[in-house]
Length: 172
Image 1: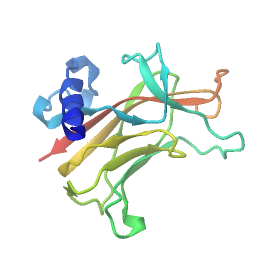
Image 2 (image 1 turned 135 degrees about the horizontal axis):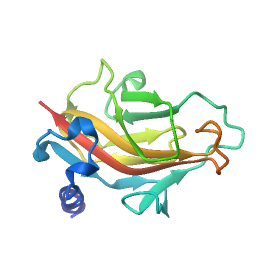
Image 3 (image 1 turned 45 degrees about the vertical axis):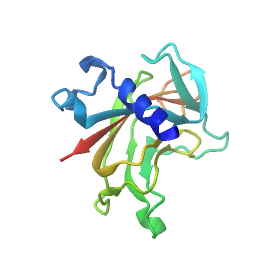
Image 4 (image 1 turned 60 degrees about the vertical axis):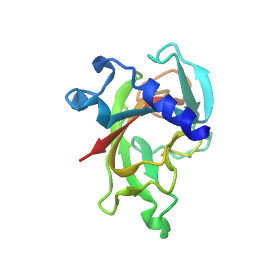
């Protein structure tokens, strides 16, 4: 039953307009794109999100400020821990609006076997998204907004990081 619910969430979640997609995906066939919404973290109402809901994290009070936000894709099926991160990036946040970011696959990333659930994670792992057991090669896209001086230079708002959408694209 859980698989049916997840599949339904993926299929109905794709009822998005082409304008909702990152520009790089405008010409990608619909059947290659899956929206995933099995989020991890504290859900909040978010009027700045097209989805009106997001998951949010706040950095620890003593967190060291790094340039940008770390995000990655983790495959617990890898035998070697140093190979379990299959995609990663650290992006510089420009402003306090939602933007799409691609999490590029690392050179050692293999085709997904479909045996494990994959996890998209951010910074301290307190927010993210579980992905279904996909098989093959994929690109990972996330819609993220950040606010506060920890993330955005010159901001006077409270430090928070928001995730409202995840898209997985099958690569041929």
